[in-house]
Structures are given as structure tokens and as C-alpha cells.
Amino acid sequence: MKKLLLTFMTVCLSATMFAQTGDYFVDASRDDDSGDGTSWATAKKTISEAVTLAGSPSSFKNVFVAQGTYTRQFYGANKRLNFYGGFPAGGGDGTFAARDWKVYQTIIDNDYPNYATTTSTSLSFSSYSMVFDGFIVQNCYAYSNGNKGSGITLTSDGTISNCIIRGNAYFDSNGKGGNSAVVLNALAATNPKLINCEIYGNYTVSVNGPRISHSNSIHIWDGGTVQNCKMYNNSNLFNDPNTGGNGGNGAICIRNTASDAALKNDVNVINNVVFNNSAKSCSGIYINLNQTIDYTTKKINIVNNTFANNKAITGSDGFLRVDLSDIALDAAVNTSPDKININNNIFWGNKDVDVATVPTASIAKTTFTYNAIEGSVSGLDASNISLSATNETDVKFSSPSATTGCSITKSTVLAPTTADGNSAALQTADWSITSSSVCDDAGSAAALTATGVEVTTDFAGNERILGAGIDIGAYEALFTTAVETTKKNEIQLIPVAGGIKLDAVSAQVFNFSGQLVWKGNVKGQFIALPAGSYIVKAKTADDLQIVGKVSVK
Image 1 (tube, rainbow, N blue to C red):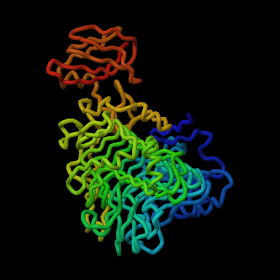
Image 2: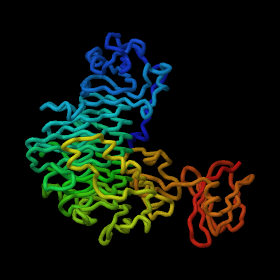
Image 3: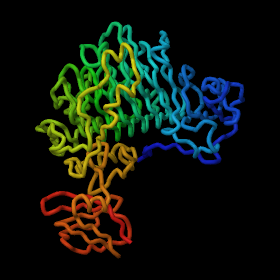
Image 4: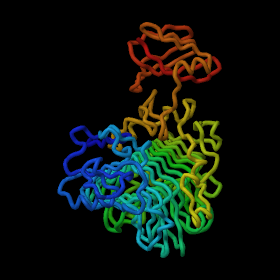
């Protein structure tokens, strides 16, 4: 099977690749654009000048951009250019290793609403397998165009990675579209990719407010990959983000562009955390395949994600809505349901108004296994787990948000403040699960492997399988160190030459590949182990489960 390796995407360039002849440099700290743009010492001041200087290269070149805010000067490119932000002013020591996109923030700010015209100011990339990595994209807007994202539109085989997309608006005056912060469009069987990005505080402004079908965070046309992304506090509700009858469906929407054409590529949505978003109906995922021919040569894979505290203002679609308009297509899916695979996900706290609806009719059109959902799993595959509405009962997130839906208000839309200001209350939420969660080791590794995407880490960058099996949701369960475990729970986990001694009722020992290497009753017992690092799960006399790491020499 052909595999696509997509883990946390820290883009690295070798020393021989950095500063090739024909690459371009941009530094906001420069006085003006008088430099030739071919080195940090002669960098351009604006991104637009560097793009103009590049012309239309016949082979790929790189545009390296230093920290700073670049206002109303870049709207994407249809050229063989890769863009890398996150360099210090002046380029640091002149190597790619000087780059840190989280520290040296490189901000593309297109100044909505101060600069508002009838022309979209969001970023658009098309035609080439380019990379756009290490930027903050904010205060952009898309104007009355149903296929454009308010922040970024990617219509190619390219990759958007390590970016923050925040505070962008979709302005609708005639009901043509919606406000998805990012749109991926798989033209000509391409695989547009969104990797390791944070998307928050994006919303819709409407004049007329007709019905739209776009999601509030990600819209995938015909194929694409979304992996290791965090999406929260987005709204696609017109006029008022928390009330009203007009707006779009879901946090993530998957559709085909033509009524007589199949999906052009697989859709893979893996290892994402999606929370506190608001929509008109369907709080989580909206799949709408409006086709008259069988699309089943391609698959939709939604695997190992966490959907939590999203809200639909109206309707009763629950966290999933699947619309298949053609009767023959509907039958084809139902007789071969592995074409829409929804596995290993957590769906918790998602509400239709104030009710957690289980969308059984839509679930029936999919392969829906090894999911943990708030509500009853009666009639569903036996591998699915029912969750209580109380976090401490069974799902046991480390620190979930206390509210449902987005925190953007109508006053925010009419007089926007910063996306950070509106999202601050949600940014501290921690959707990792503890080792006592019912989701721990309860998933199916085969379901993840079946996507064809090679996934080695969870959302936090830890081993994707860390224990007896893969966990449900975007995270593997948190582990504490042996020292912390001993101090907190008064369990003696002692590494000694050739093994460990453990004062507990029973234990399991795993290597860092997730393989079980020992289990049994261990009260005071010496466990012989080869040199290496291990994860120990122990159970106390009062049935408390303790987890620790230990190194054996």
C-alpha cells in the first residue's frame, strides 16, 4: 500500500538546500524595498515585492520571511514558490536552524474591517505543489464566493503547515457561500494538505443571510488531508454567532464540486481537536455528496479525532450529518459502507441547542466503529462506547472547556476585536485524556492503518500507540514519570540492575513501541527486564490505576 507520511510537520531544509540561487528574502525590519532580495543583508521589506521579483520561475524557489507584521501586501500566489515564515529579524545566524515560527511570529494581516472592499483579501494558492509554512494569517476576508476560505484557499497538491489562521471573516451579501476559514479543493485529483495548524476566531458577516452549506472551520472539496490541527471558536452563523436561523453546517464539511463526478481523491481527517465551534445545524461533521454516479473508488476517513463542546443552534442532526442525494448512490454506500469510515473518534459535549443527539440515520451510512460518544450506543456496532455527560465519570479529559459553542458575540462581528481576545477563555482547554479514561487502549489500530496514511504520533507528538492498544481520540493517554507517580500515589516503582521492583497488586509493562512485555501479580516482586525504557501500568489495592515511565540499565 502506498503510504503518505504525515506527522507533526516541522519542515527542515538541509544546508545545501538553504539559500539556493534564486531564493528570496523578506524582512519587515528593513527600511525599504531597495535591496535585491537575494540575501538577508539585502532583503526586501515586503512580501509582495519578493513575489514580483520572482516572476514565474520554471523550478521551485523559496521565499524566506522574517518576523514582523506584513499588512495588505500578500494574497497568495500561483507560482512555483514555497513560503517559510518564522525567521528572526536579520535572519539570525543565516541558517534554516535559526527559524522558530512560534517565537518569531510572521504575521500576514490584511486589515479587515479597516480595509474592506468588494474584492476578497484572503490568501489563495493554486496549480503547484507548494509549501506555505510558519505564518499567522489574520484579518482577511472572502467576499461572496462559495469556494473561497475566509483565511486560505488551497487548490493544488500543496501543503499549508505550522500556521495559525485567526480572526478572518466571510462577508456574504447574496448567499453564494459560507465562511470556512480554510478551503481545500482537490482539483485534478490533487491532495491539498493542512497539517499542524491552529484555526480559531473566524466568523461570518451577512447582509441578506440566505441558507449556506459551508462549515465554520474546514471545507474539503473532492479530496484532501487535514491532520494534527486544532479548530475552535469559529462560527458560520449569520448576523449573530449564537442565535438566528441562517448559517452553515458543521465544523468540517466534505463535499464534491460536480453533480456528475466522483470524488477526485481520498479525504483524510486524522488526529485533530475540534471544539467550541458554532453552526446552524450539525455541530460536528457534514458530508454532502450530490452526485449521480457511484463515487466509491475513493474513501472518506475520519479517524482518531476529538470533537467536543461544539454547538448547533437549530435542528437535530447531532455531531454528524450525511446527505447522499442519489438513491443509487445511497444504496451503493449502504452495501459497501467502508467508503465513509468514522473510527476511533471522541464525540462529547456536542449539542443541538442543549441536547446531545446521536445521529443514528447518518451513522448507518458509514462504517462507524470504536468511537466514544455522549449518549446511547444502542443499535450501533458493539465496539462503540457510550459516554456520560459528566467528564469525571468516564471520558476524563484533562481540562475541558466549561461552555458549549463559540465565545464570539454579535458585538464582535459588528466591531471586531482581536481573535485572541475573543478566544482567550478557550485557549487553555486541554482535551488530552487521562490513563483512567474509558478511551484508553479502546481503539482499533487497524482502523488507522486502513486509511493508508502512516501516522506515528498523536496530536501532542507522543507515540500514537503507547500502551496495550491505540486510544480513542486525538491523544494517547497522559503518563507521569515514575518519580511523580511514587510521590503522588505512594507506589514504589524502583529501577534496579536488570529490572524493576514494584509494590502494587498487579502490573503490565510495555516497551515504547506499545508492545506488552510482562504482566502479572507483582506485590514486592522483582521483574527482570532488558536494558531500555518502559511504561508501567499498575493497579493498587483500592483499584486505582497508576502509570509511570522507568529506565532499566
